[in-house]
Length: 65
Image 1: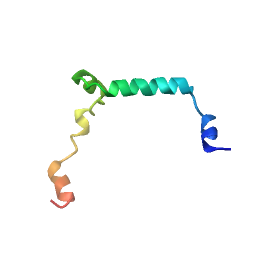
Image 2: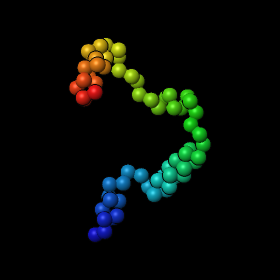
Image 3: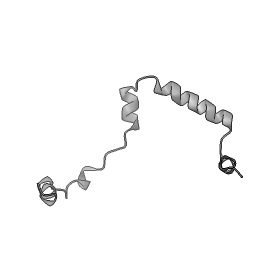
């Protein structure tokens, strides 16, 4: 059996759906990303208290600077 036939067993979408998704992706990649879309795609930063135990000078000393 060909490898592509084995992989088709695990496909969740039809070939038409994949073609439509590829076309949408190509269409979306042609336009510039807005600031709002860029910010929406960023993950939330960790809380400030997670940084309290970190010390820049000790870190730089540990890497030999």
